Image (cartoon, rainbow, N blue to C red; front, side, top):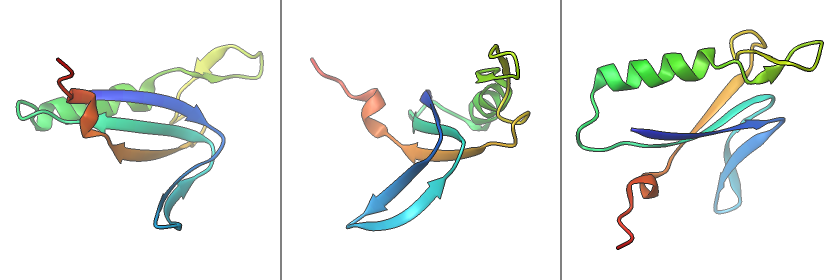
Length: 86
């Protein structure tokens, strides 16, 4: 499993000019799964994402997690993370 995270103030997903999902402050997560991934892998990366301290506190130090700020997550499937480009 591979994941790319981006902190966002707002993010959305649109299909044919129709917004199907949106969040405010939180994380946009692009995630790709491989045939070898299992439930344990999903749980491990989920916990890691929720507890990463990548949001600024009142002293502008990256010391807060997504849980600490009550942030949102927008997860987008991105199978190209496993693309073979040879």
